[in-house]
Length: 478
Ligand code: HEM
Figure 1 (cartoon, rainbow, N blue to C red):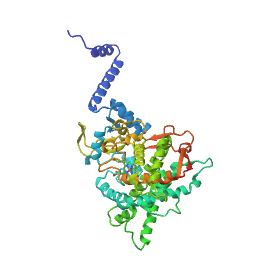
Figure 2 (figure 1 turned 180 degrees about the horizontal axis):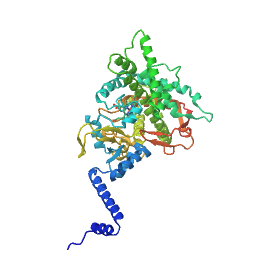
Figure 3 (figure 1 turned 135 degrees about the vertical axis):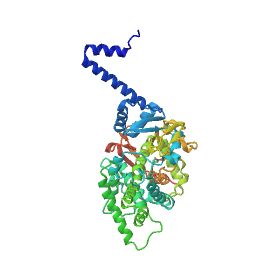
Figure 4 (figure 1 turned 120 degrees about the vertical axis):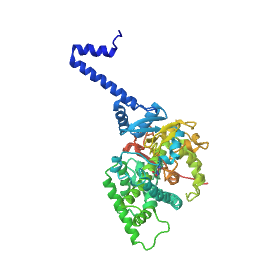
């Protein structure tokens, strides 16, 4: 006779003694069976946390909410490897940090859509609207041509002059922004400069009566305040623009971005909502990324005085006695410094995509509809660079192959403002550093100030962290 197996023994002995606890045990066993089956059914061939009957997705989603997307991505890639499967909002999501996989996704037309919570996007007016999170592909393609036109060609050429004069203008009024202890909220200053530049380039609406209204828009957007408030601000600015256009007798040869969109609306190509959302995104794109990048750069510069000396020397040899820039192409040290800052302490360290077709990435099958996060920030610290965890210009001594350095992404859905962004950063830094040396409040460094890393990396906006003194510099030109 076969000995009874353990399960039968446990079940029968308890069932014989107490019918109620026997039933409970049976239920428990059934539950274990169900959990195991569910786990097996959801077992992915890609490494990542266990499903555990739905507990895994809840835990991984909580980590994203609790620590921010950027921080959670770094945690999962470090724990499970360069291709990891997690769940965000119940949906399977891959996080990729290896350059071969990241580059494949960036270059491919299969990944030109983004993913995000529909409700979240609806709340900020970005669902099927604007450009940044628009996954209505035909509409996205149409609006992207307007962005590309404004951010390249004549728009790009005008940029240097506008950046230099906007920076100068704000520096001349530095006293108004200086507190009684002699410090300036440098992020606020940089935001005002970049908002001014964005208005001059893309909107061209006089802001006399609405001083700081655009800066407020940027701050409101950062805090994801109700879209109603934002849309009202934007609507009133676009209304002013419509009035200016209808009252002007002649049209400029080079129409600005907002005028082009208004004409497209007049011709029935775009709706009023499309126009408002596109202008809003254009106006927030630069202040949101650039002013914070420049803030990080000023902090890093002070922590690396030998770099500051090299940059200032370069500026003094390349600008003429009127402090006008001859050619930005030649600022090699400054360019390496900007690149190294974006590598070492980026504002945007990941980007989100959705697979529109079945595909294979680095030998792994990817199903249509899979959500993908490209962890570019981690990629920059794990491959190619000779001193990946140090802030060093040596990292850019040699030409870096593009697949290893992608601060703006590349391919069809890359940052459409990447060329203008480099130009703006160079122009603002050269103008500022040729007039001032900045000094963060006593003891503040990038690692000591509080920061968050949700949709992007940014300082927590308290007075202490953002305050810097501006010390006038005597620039000698050669
Ligand atoms: C330091 C400055 C900047 C950084 C680091 C940055 C980085 C990025 C990154 C990583 C993306 C996502 C790319 C991808 O998914 O492959 C992006 C998208 C975008 N950026 Fe930038 N950006 C910067 C400045 C700007 C500026 C100045 C503008 C415009 C004035 C701009 C406009 C945009 C737009 C419109 C998109 C969405 C493109 C699309 O989805 O088609 N960015 N940026």
